[in-house]
Length: 173
Image 1 (cartoon, rainbow, N blue to C red):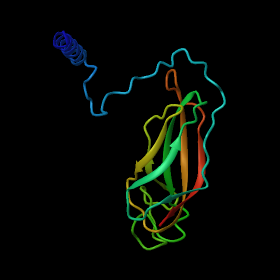
Image 2 (image 1 turned 60 degrees about the horizontal axis):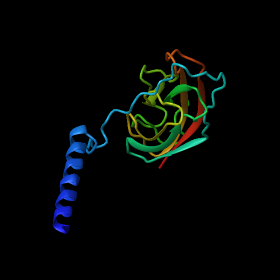
Image 3 (image 1 turned 180 degrees about the vertical axis):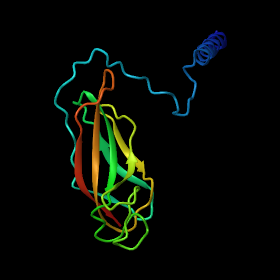
Image 4 (image 1 turned 30 degrees about the vertical axis):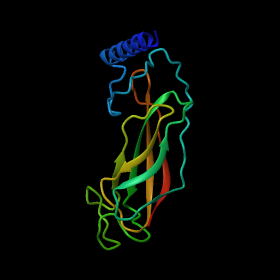
């Protein structure tokens, strides 16, 4: 009787596993599955937008990949697009982004007043964060005046909203 019960139980378990694999429940996507898009069509947009502020960011010299903690606060009802911009007009107190001697810094347009966009995010949903970025160029050791530019967009139709520029210092070591 025990052997018969064990065979029935084994057949039942095999049937359950087969059904699970046929329905895709046990499919391993390797973490590459598309994140389902949230439906924001019925959201009530709050006119107040919370923008995180930073006095400085600490980066590693000579490396493009950097650790950060940029985020869109959960209470916001808008997307963020964040850009990290190096202000070329002021130069760096020590070091520079172009690899030239201090005082010879040139921006993308070649003028001392231009800026260099080091990184720009994709749209960041409320409650989401960015932990790692890759700069367009590595920076040498020094302190650099920079801006975090926040562009804000409606969750419903991605129309532009108010934005903000946060002045900060990049400390590169």
